[in-house]
Length: 482
Image (cartoon, helix red, strand yellow):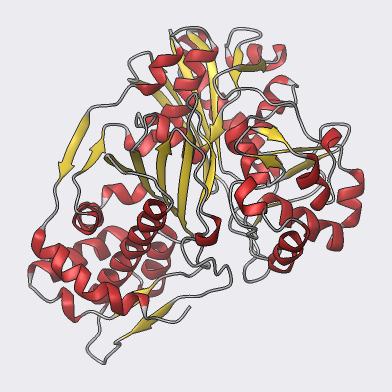
């Protein structure tokens, strides 16, 4: 018996086929592009996600038809916060404003006026990345889209619709719309009205581990899959990533260093911290919530530095490591690499990066150190904001593309003064989490299996000398202008 875990990301779509022991039997991926028509704008058309999804399944069906015939269920993970507006024919009406789109800043103030306690009821303070401000912006600038919209879905919900023909969502992803009372996991009429929306244009809610429809007959034939194969409700990528690394117990923490950086901490109670721009939604594990501190630019900032220096990310990381070994890291400038705004803890969506201490002797190794350090400082600030809301951190795992960088992970272990683990399969954590949800939806395993923790490939312990160096520079980092 195999399971398919599909992750619809911002930069690409990945699918893995795994057995019940989480052994990856096959995988496929396709890159997708982001449209940035103006500074601060970020859009994608849902057709890109569906095209990439069909291509990865086509590839798996072509190369591994025997494995596809053994798949018992499909699970979904997806980039969060982008409202997909569809018409009565289930077709998307426009490009989707993504999680890192900044254009609805003015609409955030309108929401706060209409619902002063909105941050304590939804998953966070009004922010242009979230759904409701985007709806108000669309009503002002693209009114025909709002008028013709028959339903609002999230990215992975739209893919489930394409796979099954069923409209549905689930609480952990739906929390990002700001139309949901996150403590109860139900749509809220007052919140919807404040965003110019209505409850009759929102989909039914199911559990993340519940079957949300069966695979269409034509797709089953095309991909050598069983007809009516269960497709799980799925989860937002942060929740799926947490599940993939076994984070389901109170105090479990997963730090994802991806395009953005996210500190996810599991708790049994709803503990919002909107004044520090922490997002809090239902988790994809039963009877739990996920607190999310967000760094808007993590590996995206490193990619930017590689591009402007004509280098590669691995080379820059190696040069930063060498700088530390030579004892010169403390001579590097101090950088706030907030190239796409700041969410946690300062809530400044229109902020930009800042740097202090540039000299004629500054080289790219020093810039690489400064950038990695700056992202690590932002993640530390996230953890401190979440602790201030009453959350505790017992275990820390690191995932995402940045987890391939040992120095970055060592920085975090030292700053947080806690051991961090690099679990097996961390590069595919969201896909693995989606596959776990598929296993439950397909009745292959009990719900308790969502709490299984993968083996640690490596554990990094705090380095007192590195901790002292970093903390000596953190105050200068916090003093940089926003």
